[in-house]
Amino acid sequence: MEEKKLRLTEEKNEKMKKKVLITILIFALLLAACSGGGNTATVEPTAVPPTEQPAEPTAASSVEETAPPAGTTSAGLDALTATTWMWVGFTNPVEQYSVESPENYTLSFQDDGTVNIKADCNDAVGSYTVDGSSIKIGVGPMTLAACPPESLGDDFVKYLGFAAIYFFEDGNLFIDLFADGGTLEFAPAGEAGAAGSGPVTIVGEVTSANFAISPNPYPNPTVVLTDM
Image (cartoon, helix red, strand yellow):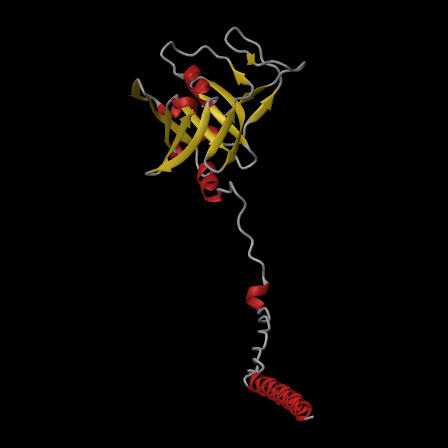
């Protein structure tokens, strides 16, 4: 009987211990939960700076600036057409010489894209185009008078067909030829040398032993005469 009471007492104590342990465990968990919640950081809202409004265009900035087109050389073109140019010299990798009687070899560039050419005893009307510092000269119909043997007329016309680059230096005009073919130098003709740069007279067909038209692709050829 005593043993049974003792066993019941021990079982009761064991149950009490378990209840105490469970209570302590629950209390510890609640305490941990409370401690963790207390350490939660508070996130404060960050102020967002106001968005900058684009500046309103002013009268000056609203005007769109227009850049000059590439290849525009109004200053160079004005100088090119400002006077009649006399051929005064030639230089290439193998020779250099001055032209005798430069007034007999002239160019007169016109604003309409034509050029009056005097090649010693012959005359021609050609065309030219300019793009930046590049220049192309096309020699048109030309008289074929018989010039003296020492004339440079044929060379002059041939060189003009190879014109590539033009520039000015010390008031003179220089024209470089393709493929290092040489450089033509021109000086302003002035009033005395510019007689052939005025208006030209177009007449009908002319025939003589020393006069012809070249080239002659037209059924009614004409010749250009200038007041010499």
